[in-house]
Image 1 (tube, rainbow, N blue to C red):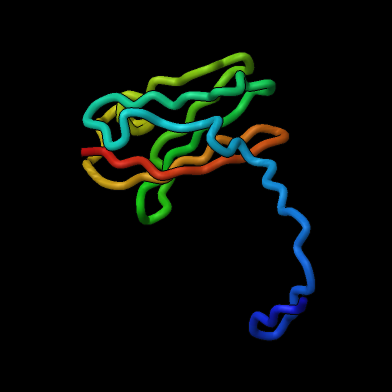
Image 2: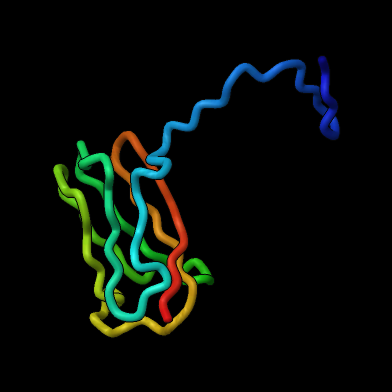
Length: 107
């Protein structure tokens, strides 16, 4: 069976594999006031980098996450050591083999 989407055709889809940390990385509480914990259901096999970005894409915080970590507590401060304003922020956690991203809300 062929399904037409715009200018291309999909004949058949057998499976779609997603090689991210789906449901194995998250943050709580979300939304948060002062502190938020990033958790890893799978202990990190490699060192990874946590990056947090503002809504306009500015990098506001970065930290190295050591291998064998299972969580990281962030105090809501930027690289300058000053508490960030309330708002929505995006994060990425990346290692040599994996990448995940998400959204957090600071009240």
